[in-house]
Amino acid sequence: MELIPGFDGTPLAVHRMGAGRPLVLLHGLFSSAEMNWIKWGHAATIAEAGFEVIMPDLRVHGASGKPHDPAAYPGDVLAKDLAALVAALGLVDYDLGGFSLGSRTSVRAVIGGLTPKRLVLGGMGLEGLAGWTGRQAFFIDAIDRFDSVRQGDPAYYTVQFMKSMKIDRVAARLLLGTMTDTDPAALAAITMPTLVVCGDEDRDNGSPDKLAAALPNAVHAVIPGTHMGCVTKPELGRTIRDWLAG
Image (cartoon, rainbow, N blue to C red; front, side, top):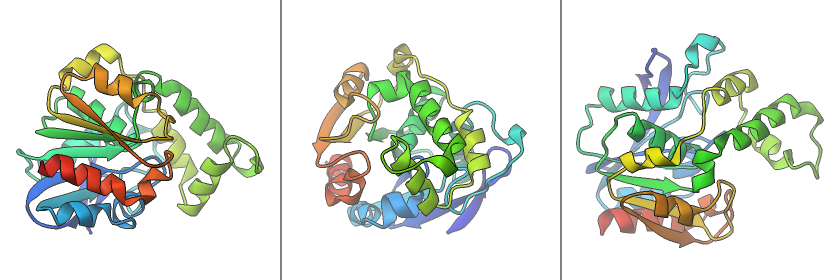
């Protein structure tokens, strides 16, 4: 692991695996590179196909910085951090992918000017981009009611995951405030080949079919599992590997 400054100098923990063509992979909300990509073998599966898998812990997550200063959270802060990371690593010819929040961040970064050659959007549907504020409100409510959420509450499993990942709730709430909806018309800027990969029981972020249809050059792959469950299954890493290596 190495620490690379984000857009404002906040340290971002970056994990690497393999050698070859660079692939930047971003994890989901309240997760980490270790939990999303390393623990279940996805990074190793992709690296074995001839890729250098570069996996940052996003701001507020994993071993990266978790500032409490509101000034550290401008709009699209994660996309700004990603652009800073790509520049710091000198990446020009590379691929980019993510899962859930990582997919959202990848989309925002490409709309903002990043130019990966290929894009992987995991665990994401059109409504998760165009209707993000609804998801945002759910997570903010979970943070605000953190100590009173009990089993049976819709926020229960989110709170349990935050507890298991030792999430800094002050920083997480600030981070959630940086995210806005994405106009579907803006997706026309995403012209590179794109893989939309989603679990067959996962509609947490809306319809992956509609997302693939809204993108100029996308294919949709279905793997087994729910939003949280598909991350634990080998099909996620294999599908990304096969598409990138194909």
